[in-house]
Image (cartoon, rainbow, N blue to C red; front, side, top):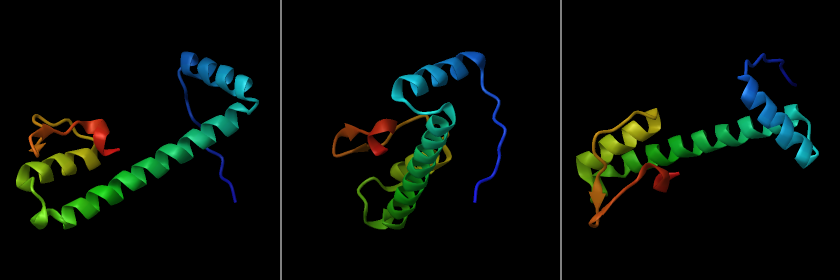
Amino acid sequence: MTATTKLKLPDDLKARIAAVAQRSGKSALALMSGALELQTELAERRTAFVADALLARPDSEGGEPLCKFLCAEVRDDEIDERPRLGGQQFLRREIE
């Protein structure tokens, strides 16, 4: 079953989507549906990863700073300081 959803897009983004869709031989709808599905999957996987990491927290090296980082990551919050584990500072994109 499918549902109809209205999505307001900035004109420049709509033009970019149309151009990419044309080059790829897909419809703009197929391109947007695929992109939404992919981003939803990534968000679900990140949430599951963070939940697993938080459950394992008592055994982790990072302790409280790591917990704050992971909680901020799942909420997509800005964080002041990234934890250092094993002498290296984690960056947001390394987790995804």
